[in-house]
Length: 219
Ligand code: DX5
Ligand code: ZN
Image 1 (cartoon, rainbow, N blue to C red):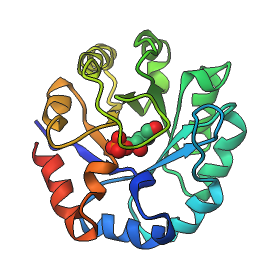
Image 2 (tube, helix red, strand yellow):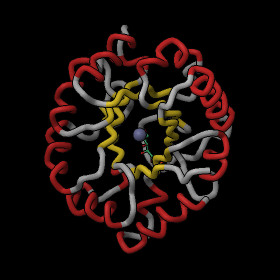
Image 3 (cartoon, rainbow, N blue to C red):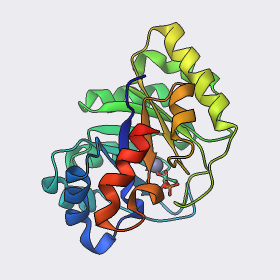
Image 4 (tube, helix red, strand yellow):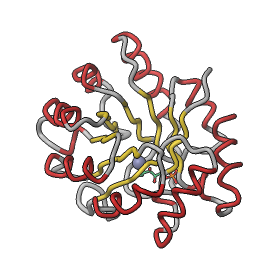
């Protein structure tokens, strides 16, 4: 099994030092930078606007994977792309026309991701699989870092793996929420190819990032 892409969520970083934090992640072996955008409406928390993404963009060459927990999401796609997003991931609940939204993301030259909440049916993936570069399975209810991994997510990863394989899709299959070295192996065995992790990467301070990332890759 290939090592998964490790995508640290900067939600768990020191917001007063974001530029240094993404540099430290790059040195520590991160593959992507996961940016959690929350609007205080679609989810009960408020985080980063496009100006912040733009400000940290020059501090690393790692791809920016922007998870948009925003509704309606369509009016924000261009601003996050211009700010430097490489992947834009959206929830199907964040607008009335998912097919149109995913097409708009690709038209902007970004990779298009679809995010499934714990209660979002897997069937939605089948309907838009040709438009997907990434599927993100939420293993917590979105809104906050530091929550516990929902075990039934493993079965959901397997089911989405099946859908992607049957369609011949090369989309990245990413897992987000409560990912640790203790469950990373099970996620990859179920078919995940990328892991988002906040708490388990940032614990112990900057000196620990490399070991924390290595532990996730090796799990
Ligand atoms: C939750 C976010 C996650 C979260 C991950 O809404 O999408 O990216 O911050 O953090 P941990 O790894 O602490 O669960
Ligand atoms: Zn996220």
